Length: 274
Image 1 (tube, rainbow, N blue to C red):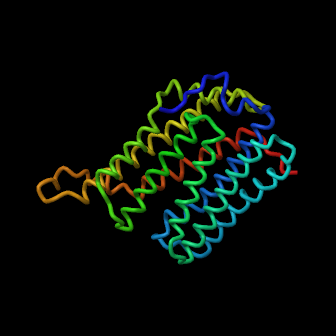
Image 2 (image 1 turned 90 degrees about the horizontal axis):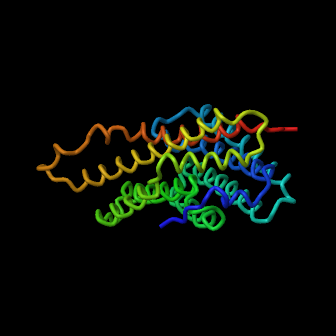
Image 3 (image 1 turned 135 degrees about the vertical axis):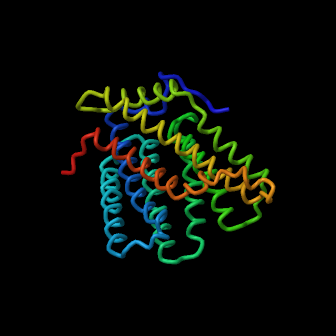
């Protein structure tokens, strides 16, 4: 059972508003950069033009480079927060490199992506609250990704074990909207903002709610894919073909919501590039 923190002892309240806001800048920039690379990974079967690939990679690199510059500027921040900045940035840049290797035909680079995510979630969990909204999504996405890659590679799929893993992935997303609102409010209240946060609060709650809903749909899709793989002719009519046909849409929507959540933060927090 996850530890549920009250609004008075959130992990980020150990730091000043300025420090926490700078952390969010670095995290959002890093994740948006990764999101651009993930678009290529998700849509690789569409065989995008070389020009499109280069433009997408170039845009991702700009965000990652700026995130690293902000990390360097935070050299005098508390060690734990600097380590979190490092975890976020290095996980994203390593994932981008693995995606680039995958697009260039290197074998097992998708497994490298899984290992990067595994290590990131394990390390970051030591520094943030167990019921943190992002860490919940991370744990769920890791479980989902591990099973998905096993299915695609046809490696010793055991239906009971996969369903148990999917149940854990789903449980990580079980949070009521009131708790979500409280966490977002606490986070926004601790940010250093130059304008009213009322609309930002609402939009950030909606962003998390949409991401959680799409992650749950992705889990339902994978559960149905598992069921279809074990189904005989007698149960074919019970398979939700409509859901199975949404696979590309689901993954594109997960990526879109991931990128939009980063942009939402970046658009609210003024960034000085000088």
